[in-house]
Length: 328
Ligand code: ISE
Image (cartoon, rainbow, N blue to C red):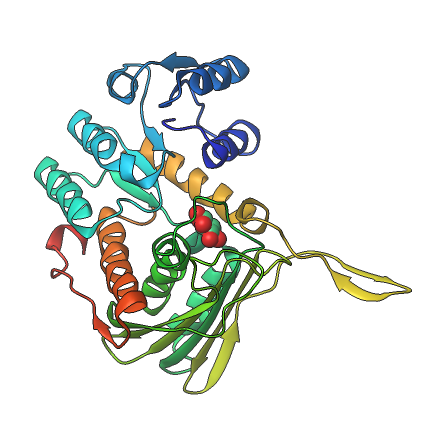
């Protein structure tokens, strides 16, 4: 595990409690004290650098949970070492960097890179996809999404609404609809007064796929009340909605209440478990699972268009190379 911060430590907890077939034996972090503290707690070895960790013969596969700008050299080192690598989203902050990763992976001849887009592993999104793929509702026409966070940290910059938050819907919708986005536009409603002036919050990212499906994604990252993820797909003969959380309903003198999750670990715990379990099982067999570096690249291309649309207004075309045969 490289970069065992909040996300990394949640993965460690899952791997050591409910996931079979894996153990975290090595950690490294830009902050040596963090690496040492985590290593001591779980009985692993702390490495001074990520390069040493990747090269260690004790390490069969690598999870990268550091921040996006640090990913590229570590992913490239894993490819060079021939080790499966699970890299948290975003794969890289730029499409060019993702392209370099794809080139290295193709030169090595083996799909080694998995990108941590966990929603593909959520049971409810999977059921929505199965219904759409059955053809019973006809063709998809529109998808309405909402991505609300109670709040975001001080370091959250204006572009992160697209490339850190909406990137989840970008990946999930590409997977759900089975096609690429061709353009992006951003609608800017009245801003909330309750948080940062530097953010356009909320915003609505409007995307169009190659066949003309329209996806709108409300991104509201200071909604105050919860981590609320919604999605309704409208097709020719019906519509299908993402299940609300699988939580009990409380009834009392005040009324009927379903508690709302407050963060992504709580909301998508099950999806994270399935995602990492499938990755570990596949890696042990020399197979690939989950989103590929092509998916990381494609998401980065759509994010680039979305970020441009946020500053430029108007419809911005998505620029993307043709999908290499290696990833088909
Ligand atoms: C964060 O990085 C995540 O991945 C969360 O799932 C998302 O809801 C949040 O907006 C991001 O900042």
